[in-house]
Amino acid sequence: MIELTDVSKWYGSFQVLDGCSTRVGKGDVMVICGPSGSGKSTLIKTVNGLEPFQRGEIIVDGTSVGAPGTDLALLRARIGMVFQNFELFPHLSVRANLALAQVKVLKRSRDEANERGLRYLDRVGLLAQQDKYPHQLSGGQQQRVAIARALAMDPVAMLFDEPTSALDPEMIGEVLDVMVGLAQDGMTMMVVTHEMGFARRVASRVLFMDAGRILDDCAKEEFFGSPRSGRAGEFLARIL
Ligand code: ADP
Ligand code: MG
Image 1: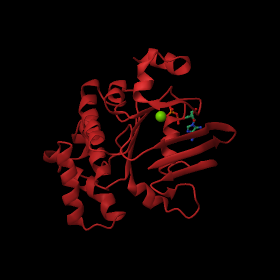
Image 2: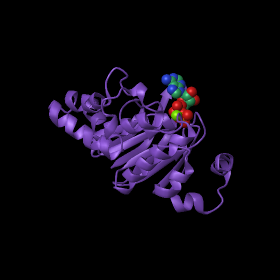
Image 3: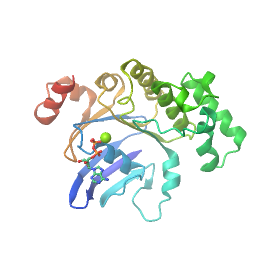
Image 4: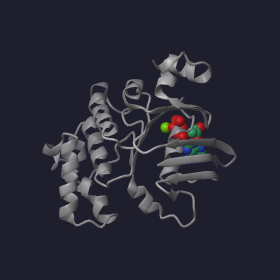
């Protein structure tokens, strides 16, 4: 579904990604961890074309992300992305937030967009909140709306960038529960997170990054199974 081959990226003379290669199969859940500044956000943003890269190749569902002819707007519509800070439109109701991109990008009718939006709002347990505005919701509820909004676009894969790190501790569980449900339903996911409980429950693979390089890319059982040495071991010892 997603394949990265030798992806490198520079900001000026600073190399932020250094020869990153990995693949995420259909239905796989790839958890990406590593120290702050190691390039995790940059890596997943290259996958949906939010960040250009200078070398290598990324193929998503048969489409080459970096190729000159690729329609990046269409690509982004097909890959859901959920950020740390929810990024809902503050001046729109929950229902309108869910419908907007469906109408603008997928050209769905207002009725169809609302109907689909509400179906996914129900799935994240927030149907009763459809007329509220983002500021009237808790952080955990806003993040669940953001997930529902992405799902309403029928994405082929979902990217998450530290979706729970801006949340109060008591709200982390409700967002992770939605993500676990998605994983169990077979959604292809790349998830930057330090929630190792989530990784243990649903990850198929764990990728460890440091200084722009992928140092570990292995099955969950292998990643957690034996004491890890080197940078990944130090990192795990600090966060577990
Ligand atoms: P992570 O998500 O792992 O914390 P990032 O991908 O956000 O790391 O950033 C990786 C590195 O790239 C950091 O050193 C960061 O300072 C740098 N960086 C990120 N965005 C930019 C930018 N727009 N210009 C220059 N450097 C950047
Ligand atoms: Mg980041």
